[in-house]
Length: 555
Ligand SMILES: [Zn+2]
Ligand SMILES: [Zn+2]
Image 1 (cartoon, rainbow, N blue to C red):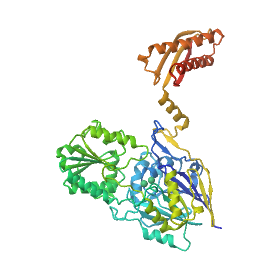
Image 2 (cartoon, rainbow, N blue to C red):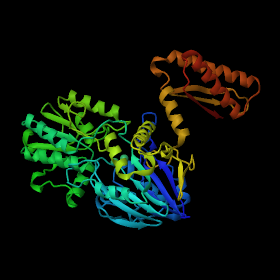
Image 3 (cartoon, rainbow, N blue to C red):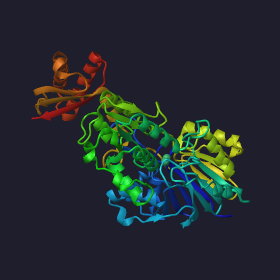
Image 4 (cartoon, rainbow, N blue to C red):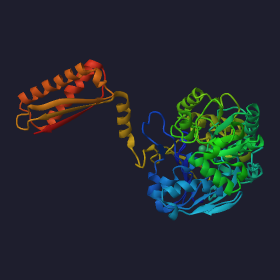
């Protein structure tokens, strides 16, 4: 019997984001991706959400390496947090490592982190496995699918992919190699494949189609200034926008910290071809007529502090949006960002701009395979077992159905969720449900985990507000010396509710009078009386339940 392989899913199965799983063989662990998730509307004040690293922390010394399939935030954004707990070399394409590097550097962890670049098609031994890096196309260049050749057979992870037959850089998914891996007599034990677009019928259009749409827009508005927002990591999108703009006689300017940074890396690595004499600094932009420039910027997700939002709000240092502008949002709102994106579109239109986005023009295509491509992948790999990854539950389910349609035995298709583990032996794969902690880790600023309790408090403060009752009592008699004073945020507007607040004070005063008459002088009892009296009054009179904070001082 060969040593079994244990696969532990820490994130990305049940949500889009915080992708992370581990392969464990003979006590050695390989981590695959370590991403973050963007917070949703019911997570007030949370900056980002990470996988629970408990399992990895306990095995910090056993981690042989980290595989980075590509540099999107949902795969690389958690690295700078994980690397605080453990130290291991990171394997990825030179571009993926280049893009991920800044975050690791900013966290001060670069000194003890080895970045190991791997080439297309290369195989590397990482601890207990041979990892073969197979090129795939996606919405960031130089992504990988990885075939893990293990003691119990080959496990293929597609990473994020689409089957773009005319990619912008000509680097296609290596279909021939994937077919070869699938056709070997021993076959592929298990396929883990990207489920993001499993519900979408047909094929995802090629990235090249966006270039055609951009050329068309430039031709239609020769005299207007263009501002095009996209993901800073989507260098093929940036390339196409820049090429179409330059061909239309325009110069391009980058705006937004990560756009400036990623474009510099892309040009340095030869991934981006934008001639230096066609680039202008953003500060110089007003020296050119509107029809001769195109600004490429961040902010396509409606981030409130991004260049695009600030421009729309007339708060940007260099640029103001006017009716001379055509603004193109060349991206799709990721879950949780829809409302912000709509708000920015509204603000831009209010500022006079013509706004083009993925709902009114073909200025965006997905980076993920649709159902026909997913079936194509299944046909190439012909896996004995299949687990859909990277998606919300319904995406995973849709992908599972596709796999059965494509010929995988239904009893060999397993829906796993965060925290589940799979044990792969020579002849079986068994599921261990909820094997490890896999809750959300909420990050606010630089604080590690703000926790469920804090979030619950924030939600209740947001919905009901807070009332602070301040009263000074005589320590011996328990009688009120000064107050009560009432300060509130979010219950009633103090200036307009003076009478109500007076009544609330009286209710507290009466309750404290009763307490004193019963001989209560201790601080805790008086606090309880204060909270209860105020809470009851507020609930009876206003049918609300704000947080009541009693502040009792003794003299
Ligand atoms: Zn991705
Ligand atoms: Zn992803």
